[in-house]
Image 1 (cartoon, rainbow, N blue to C red):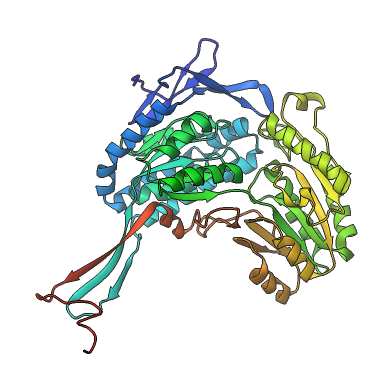
Image 2: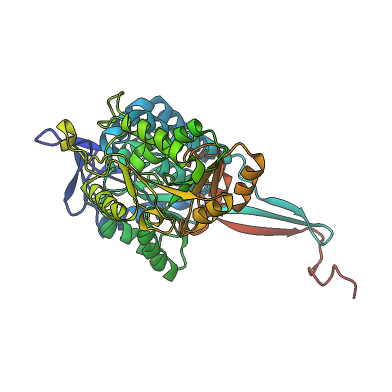
Amino acid sequence: MTETISATEPAAAGTPTFRHFIAGEWCDSSSGATFESHNPADRRDVVGRFQQGNAADVAMAIRAADTAGPMWRRTPAPRRGEILYAFGALMAQHKERLARAMTREMGKVLTEARGDVQEGIDIAFLMAGEGRRMAGETVPSELPDKWAMSVRQPIGVAGIITPWNFPMAIPCWKMMPALVTGNTVVFKPASDTPHCATLLVELMEEAGFPPGVVNLVTGSGAEVGDAIVGSPDVGVISFTGSSATGKSIAAKAGAKLKRLSLELGGKNGVVVLADADLDLATDGILWSAFGTTGQRCTAASRVIAERSVVDGLLERLERRTRALRLGSGLDPSVDVGPLINEGAVDKVASYTEVGRGEGELVLGGDRAEEADLAHGHFFQPTIFSRVGAMDRIGQEEIFGPVLSVIPVADYGEAMLALNQTRYGLSSSIFTRDVNQAFRAMRDFETGIVYVNAGTTGAETHLPFGGWKETGNGHREAGHVALDTYTEWKSIYVDFSGRLQRAQIDNQPG
């Protein structure tokens, strides 16, 4: 391992080179290979060079995490929580710097990047509190002079594999509950956002996490991700990404009976009933569909509206969407930033071609390449009308600024259209009828339901996750996030001084 004193050093051409973080030291990859991260709003802007990790690097990181494990799990949970709190405070102190770095590397507009950082702060503080609250159960025993209780215990080494769209919030969602419960982590960020991950780990080092407790290995999913998933020394995997990749990880992890938390795709819908406030609905739809350029797992890609309000809603959506300004998210006048990379642009473009054959194009539908936009990965915000609930653009996750409007006859048809997908992450309904709102809360087959709001905006103190192919049942955020990273241990203490046999000595003969 190469000894270094910092995460980065200037390269000869002025582009900084960043390192892995293993066993408390910043180090180069064993292969010496690197890759570049570019600004998606301007491909000419190189954020930095990063280590192209491989299986040998992952093995070193896992060894470091495994070595640090006994010490970290014996560290009192309140003390672990204090370190989490120190990390959250550092994030708050550096919030603007982190947000600007995120916008440069990932592309989301600066106000959204600040929100991304704030989510990381919020979950750090929430989980810091769990250091003093990590409750089990104390229950009465069936037998006299006997104590019965349960406690949580850490699993061991946690493999954390995160996406690029929330490059600070999601790593914090995963690492904070893992760490406060006494696990150590090996963290592989998305290859599109390694700088954001490096900035997080720099602050984690500063906050006081002991060497080996947090380890960062950058590189590809094929090299780094597969090595983490395949290691017999990694007891729990948490992954956020595509359903296809999640299924592949599930097959590999399942063969080794690993604990696995998957947060996968979504095809989220907004239901607009005839009595809805259409101006409010428009606000919610625009934010949900085109915020983060549609690159959220909770983004609204479907509007399911009663026919009597479709025309009025479309008029509002078209007018407001035409006014959206595209560009670099660092420009405060910009509303919509770039897609993450050229592959994402190609995917969105291919779906708009599908949409032209299935619905009616209202606006957009093309790459945005005028003036400075030609240097980035931009696509016009796009709306299709007259889409069928079972059409491809009404069923498949596009992960871009494409919105389909699906007309329906009534609430019953809307509910069926909403639920007839293989995903079940987030949904919303706009209505003034409290009865219809409560029916939606009962009927919508999603892990998150909003009433008179869009499909985005989850808060860190409630469980986050979905049904069906959106995941495998675990939840991130909220107190239940601890379940992914802990095993339950039931403990019985008999102080009667004699052998007592449960279910035998406590029942009449």
